[in-house]
Image (cartoon, rainbow, N blue to C red):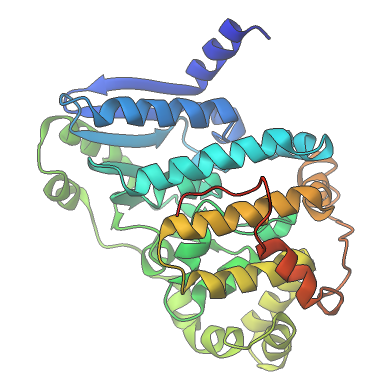
Length: 354
């Protein structure tokens, strides 16, 4: 594909336009659940840089085309192919994506993300660090990386680490998803607006200068948070020091939902589960989102050098046999040294944001 054709394709995948006071960014790959290509990341970054200096743009609004979701995450087929070829393309993707996540978190103008429908992985990175985060009754929010042999990234490990109690640990290790009430409870969203009211909200934002008041006028009470009723066993089980002890507590708790959670943890990559637990515990004490993104970049680059990411994507997306053959068959086979390898500084694989 020529450079001109590539630019045209990317422009079609991200629609950018002005609507009154608002700069609109629309992720436009609805048949792929608006999954992110590298070109989409660079287009969004360049647009935000331009609008930060444009006095005519007072607010930025991010939405996804179609009715199925804002964004299902990165284009993991492309990530799979890159990892098999040495990972250079995926490393560049992660580098630019994480820098964009930091830009969104520090954006000088109101950044409104409409997390309607499926919002996972990279979609969380583009939305949950914004100033105003909106969920609807159709929202499904998740960081499901351990299912494919990766670790929660795009700043998601920070969000999970600071969720109430051990809810974030539960979600990270199981690759669990949140409905709108749970997304609000866990700090991934701020407001609930029914999907039928989103068009009216967008029209109002284009005209009204007070973003907070405008969103509040359209917001409604959210559905109940399903995880709120599960806090007792989640906090007790996931407070354990090791992944093995967490699973043991889950299996012995006598709670059916806890046993189901243990089965989910055990189905995921044992290496990714142990590295996720270490990353979440460490993220609680890191000083900033940038420091967390630096940590995530080290981990993601290390994952590109391993086997589980390629195998996880193969099993879930390529062959769809749902039967991954992980490099470590069980949690006990993953050593402390294995985990430390993912967290250690790596020459040439440092993001340098913090």
